[in-house]
Length: 126
Image (cartoon, rainbow, N blue to C red; front, side, top):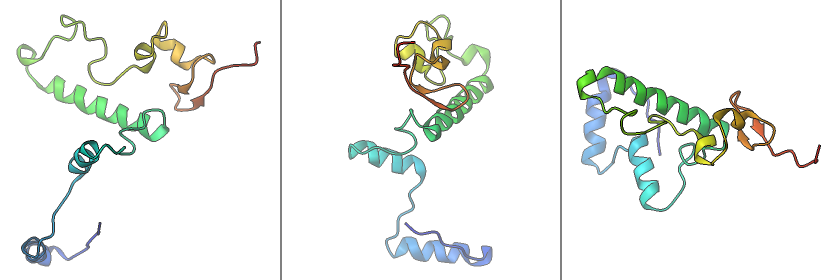
């Protein structure tokens, strides 16, 4: 891909010229869709066990929660009534069957802790 910097006065002319010459504009959503259909991973979306993946999930979850809160209450799905425990971002401790969300930050789990640090299982037997 290319990053093109151009003065605002010439941007429209350049944009039309590029499109007429066959160039295509592709955004992050389109790149993610193409990677999905090609069976390829798209970082950081498909790497939830990395700091970047965790940060992306948190940002996406906040955006979903904000979008949800902007709708009138009568137009929002009731996650409680639908028994959806984590509607905006996955709680990996729950998904992995750990007893509680706090277990995800214990030394017995592995993955990302609540502070964003990598943790591994304690195999020392102590």
